[in-house]
Length: 133
Image (cartoon, rainbow, N blue to C red; front, side, top):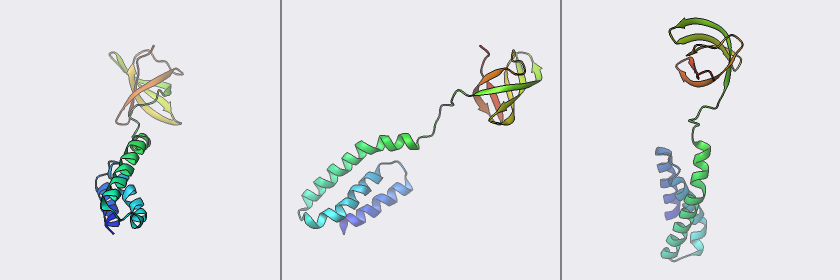
C-alpha cells in the first residue's frame, strides 16, 4: 500500500516538474509494490528501494536526457544563392534557396548567383550567411 502511494506521488512530482529524477524513484516504487509482500522487514524494503532508485538514476538519466535534449547546435547546412536583392556597405541581401523554399538572407558581399553558402544563424525569418571563404 505504501509503495503504491509513493509511486503515485513520484509520478505526480515528475509530471509537475519534469526533470527525469523522480521518474526513477517511481519505477523503483512500482517494483516494490510487487516485491514488498515477500519482504516483511521495512528496513530491507527501504534498502532495496534505495539501491534500485540509485541504479535507475545513474544508469538511465543521462541516456534519456540525451534523447530529450534539444539540439542547440545548428548543423552546417548550405543554401544556394538565387540572386542579389540589395547591397549596402559591406552586407548584402540575397534571395536563397533552402530546403526547397525561397528565403531572404543577409551576409557579406562576394556571393554571386549560383554560389553555395553556409548558414551561420537565423534572425527571425532571415538566414544569416557565414563569411565567404
